[in-house]
Amino acid sequence: MIISILIGLVIISASLYIYFDVVSNNLKYITKPLTTLLIILIAIFQLPETGSTYGYLILTGLFFSLLGDIFLMLPTDKFVQGLVSFLVAHIAYIIAFSLGFGPYFEIGYLIPSAVYTIIFLWILLPKTGEMKIPVIVYALVLMTFLWQATGRFYYLGNSSAFFTFAGAILFVISDTILAYSKFIKTPKASSFLIHSTYWVAQLLIALSI
Image 1: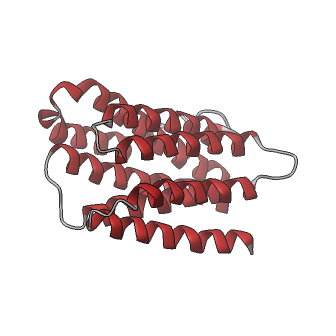
Image 2: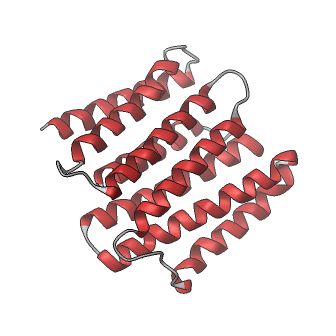
């Protein structure tokens, strides 16, 4: 019951943020971190009473994601700080995803993610200027993030693993649109596309605990 209420609040808060962002209302500075905080609460309620290493790692990832949200929404350019925060979040997620079967090294499942990353970097890098190295590092970590989520789903095959896999795919979609908007061109409805996929991704990962 509590989880259902919190999910409803996430939907409301996320919708309000997207609206406030489009109309440039300062309330967006409240609703953006609030949405991620609500997802963190969901993760906390998902934790078993005895605790869970996987759960604590997911909470770590969510906490650094919250920091990334705050950096990216500030009026001053804190893109690098936001990138580093999400980099740490993804590393925490990667470690969490490998629990239960060890790091996943099946090359066959890496190929689609690697091909996508190469195409993404080929399009993006000419526009990134001095940000080339941070963008390459982040893209490689994001590729590993999707690879390990795929491995978890392949090996475990349960609903929790499916949530991580679906969440990872949506996270990659969100980050792709964000990077395209940042360095190339801002598409119409970019705020909706970026944040709806991002928060659904984080919600699914939180529900995987």
